[in-house]
Length: 262
Image 1 (tube, rainbow, N blue to C red):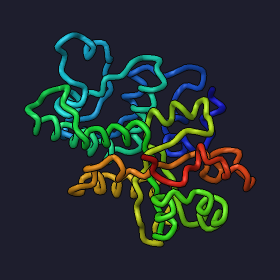
Image 2 (tube, rainbow, N blue to C red):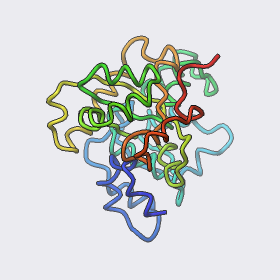
Image 3 (tube, helix red, strand yellow):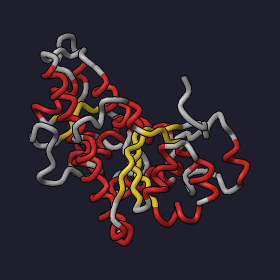
Image 4 (cartoon, helix red, strand yellow):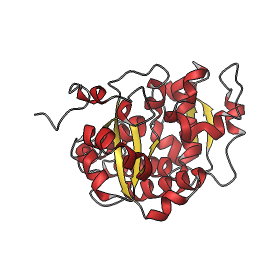
């Protein structure tokens, strides 16, 4: 299991994974020790991870409301899914806070009903759980993602894609799936056009900039009016993210679909 963590899927989390015990999953106290000063959730409350048991009681405060109001992120002990959620808060603090704030805003707009969903919250959940931030200084390459032209992007333009695109996995359910990867894993992506100077930044600076730009993208009016604004991305096609160094790999239309299906 730990060997899987060397995959590029986990690259954004690597600095924090390196500080955790190698032989077991960390406790909540160990995770809180990683939280930097000044980290906040969507409501501006100081970020910290808290035991999840109380949030499961009947009549307990809704998850996103609790995170927004108190700063407490309910976390189950010895649970990969929740561990990756905590690490995503550390790697993508601005985007995660934006997701939390937008969830809360939507809930308040519907009278605070905990079960109120709607398209915006559905889109937020899809990205929070299974999102990838795609950044490139080449609009034509980003258009290939939105146009489902995955073989062109990942094979025919492979060298250019590797040189001019960066992929940052933020979704904690996506990270959990990557512990036992399979070809059909599909993410929901935010496509960001960045200046060419972005590609010259070191990895931590690229991550910080991608986090900021994703948070701004999520907050744009209309960005989440449709779940289709999050472009599907078969992550096994990303060069280096799977054993995909042969052309025939991309001929599997069950994975690399040519477009939306009715």
